Length: 458
Image 1 (spheres, rainbow, N blue to C red):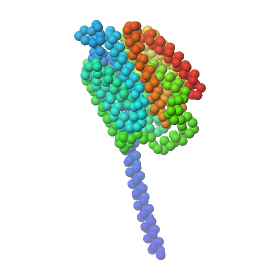
Image 2 (image 1 turned 60 degrees about the horizontal axis):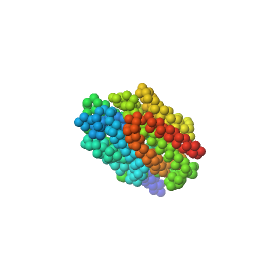
Image 3 (image 1 turned 90 degrees about the vertical axis):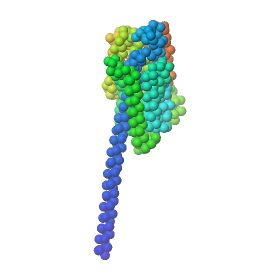
């Protein structure tokens, strides 16, 4: 009897030992899998940051991009005083109008396609949207290599669509970090999109010192974009196990759904949100300030030239100053927003718009660095407050679509930039003072009307 008990005890001990070994093997395997997945997530975050740095070069670096196109004599045939097809530097309003049209169409392509690009990124997954983004950007950036005026505009339309796909794909990476770190991840994405202005600035410097031709610079930029976005797409496929879109962890989704019950507006359908008066007025407010920012970015080079910046020195200073200013201002501005709340932050946006608009109207070239600082503060504040207000008011369920809708309204309003440029170049000799003063007055009036409605519920 005692021998039987000893045998059973020995068998149980062996089973327990075997189970412990299996558990140990599972823990080691899980640790290895978790470590490899963590490494893959970190690599994907780095690739996302690089894609942001390369993805928004056109919009935010136009002040340095435009002289490269002028150096290659794009639209110089429109100049009546040209010699052998070459336009005299800064003395050809038709060429300037044509280049402004290129910027305007690209900016409108970005803002208007952000909504469908966001929907496609949600449906197809970030691996597919990242690949499409890289294809559009690579083809668009390489279009100036051919040096055909007719191909420049469609090429920059591809760049605008590629930026939209790039931004929609980058937003997916927010769910790769913990919920407490997502705000900082979003701030990093916006800062690096702003910092993309450094890319055309470096290209401009290399071209000026004679180290590279504009064609070789565009080719190198195109190849670099194709490589980074291809790696980004492959990384998403490896991380998600294919072309999937379910990025967020199931436990975190459950927690966010539980939290959403605290605010009944988070459970509204997309149609119900679009019908809300608060969202419509927020869309008007957002469109006004998207227009004001794009108008300044699109006309700053010509404005500086009219003030005496013949060698584009101040234009390059503007392009070089914006990225570090955006990065340095992101943290203090976000802290200010937390302290003030959305109600006062919206008022602060309008105040920054007024200050920047007033400084831009002063015809003093030496004062323009102060204007550069004011537009950096204005832009950082605007792009931090609006997405955060959307998320906190209507929750995470339709946030990407709602952001896309706001950019769509802003893109539609930005179509007015080209007629303004045409009027300015033909009737006012390239002087943007009248256009800036008129649009500033309209923007401040429309913003104050929107704030009266938004302040009741914000």
